[in-house]
Length: 324
Image (cartoon, rainbow, N blue to C red):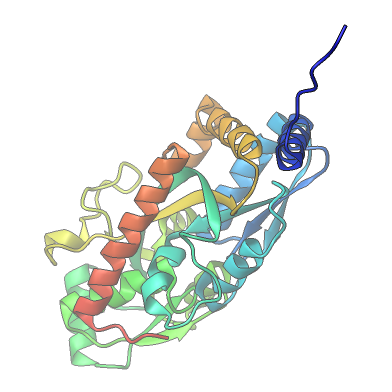
């Protein structure tokens, strides 16, 4: 009895082995603690979202999810570290508004937010609140504009760094209102908030989540919101767009992983993240802080970020923000 051998190219055998190994590896994911890299300081807007999400993911994964804050350069330091991390699912990156702004604002970046990452899902949207230290005589946005025009370059505003959402909100406002305020950058949202609370600087376009308690206890005076609609948490505050038509800045946060992360692992993280974000307790927590909880498919996430890059690039050029 004769037999016929089936000849299979070595490359095909190798490819099948790699595919099988990747699938088996993904089935055991995660087998150790996962790092969630956040490109801002502790206490900042993205950090607040990250900690709520990390807590839920830790329960879903059955593994610790460790927050790693890497602030600096408007989010570029953290983004570069995340882009260069091993593509094994053990580094998850919480990207945010800065990274869509930085694509235009910086002449040279060592990473590409669209090419060096695989998208997972959007997580949350958040407006900012134009606010001042209580020692400032401005009671309304109109007051602030009049004061800034009367004292050009004398009034200071804090930001979480050049290119951050807090910086962009203020610079966009300056351009449309035709006022000149002095920029004082800090290494993250936490230090920027502390500076305006202490009176070291006068103005801060605060993320609603980190500023809400200070608005309520009187340590910061809110003047207007950066969204086009009023917010349920601060219903008496008008949108800046009511006075400056066309103005809108809403921060976003989303999960990414380094490019070439195995598809099975991307799918595992995506499923876990959506489960956490759709849980009633997570939504209650984030919405209570002023966030709008959102989820998306990976492709939708990529399209959204690309759209934000295009939008901010156009506005940056229109108002003449200098490249860094």
